[in-house]
Image (tube, rainbow, N blue to C red; front, top):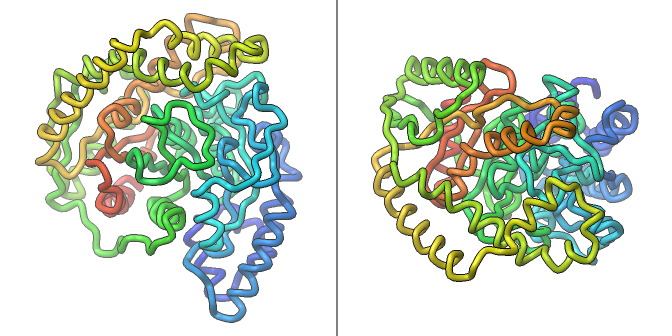
Length: 443
């Protein structure tokens, strides 16, 4: 029986616990055993937390026995990206610069999830300091992709996605600054939710660029993402029943998002559009010319803030960093304060234009990534390839961060190719309801 547990959705596991057919302690042990025996586990988990997991599972089992479960996911184990502080356990954000860093308290979202009964399995590998969309990390480990073990799994929440895709966790919690939930979710055929900036607290989350950093789940279903978001907010999940795509207004974003689209991502996206249309969605096409300008502001905004946060630490021991990430951090050193302020002022104007353009639609849709997961060895040896693939991996997802929207990626019929739905700020519940209907259409 436990062999099937590691392939079930988090919500289905929760329902089985509620019915008494799964004991949370046995469930926890099933995942810990699989992690311990899996040949790729060391490339997925930076470290596990078995003592904590067993204690939390015992509490969940007691509540289940007495009819006092805290919610659907009470007793369900999940993984956490290694930038969420975990009391008494190393939290190193994929960097040798933070080796041996042990926080005294849990991150706020981990505290909330624990209060809701979720079980912490451990911490997953990630891109160094979360500063890459690829997931390549020669400093700690490069997590594998479920569809090609020689390829990267996407970043920066690389291990979070791999933990779910390889059946080493029912779900994982990651972060998203420019696509770090959505890219690995798409490349590993998962669902990933980027929340609106400020929706979930960043207290106890190792930062990259706090004005863009967000927290989000990676899971096997939209339902799982809805319940994970609710758990991190200590509230009830939205009602996902009775949803339909009939009459849903979707706009294909043509500005930037369809440029240089590789063959398989394009095929997966076109097939998804056809399925959504057959399910009753009204699909039109449009764009925002100013979006191209917004994209060009990224290097000023993100690198300047990242260097402001990490510059003093980096410059004490730059030799400890992967050179490609070091270069990206240092790129912010020469950004003028006047240019940074001007860029933010212009981005706010473009965000208002985006809000006006998208107001008449239930979601703006686009391919999650323009490319497939690249080969890890070639990324290490071919500098130009690394640069081009990293930029293309982040390009489409970065739109959601720049425009400060919430976004949901779903798998398509093409492996490692996702389709993204973007809705307005703080519209996660509405987006998840749309997403559950789209998930059925795309299945």
